[in-house]
Image (cartoon, rainbow, N blue to C red; front, side):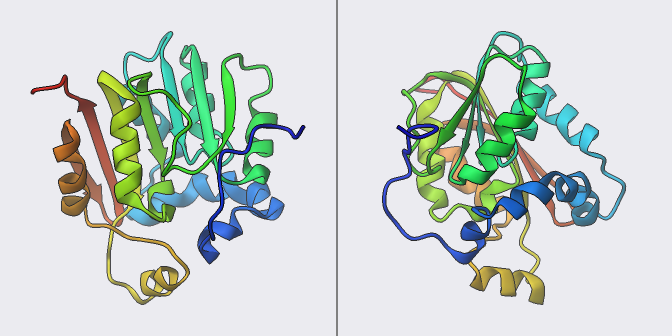
Length: 220
């Protein structure tokens, strides 16, 4: 038996997603993430500010059950557990990323690594208090399927936090697009999520996009 159950199933990976399978990518990931929003927003945007916004958007955190979707090395998962979350599923399709995440979360009870795809979450419906996506949305091969899964696993009143790179049409984004990355516009992302039963707030700073939302009770 391996380190964990593999829920990924069959299917090809884009070149952009395949890069995340490399141990070297996992090794350098947090150094990049510490600078990512400063580069995208065009102003000093420290990681501590991002994590603080994420925790505030997912309140109440203490005792809750959360999903860090596209966890990479577990930055959001650790922040939620340190804020008192009872349980955090840290999901990624890269074993190398999950090994790094598990190592960095050592000593934090409630950390649960999941080797799976965002398009098919191995979690029960209405079982989560919150879902956080820290920049991985651009890598999802089927964002419509991911949105449906996020709506499925959140309980009524559950919270969503999502960070993404906004479409700019730059030559660099076009090159990354050929490697499998997707760059949505804020209005398109809100239009995708709203019909699934979310009350949403969205904003952007430069090329950094943000969405915070609440899953509404059925019928609202």
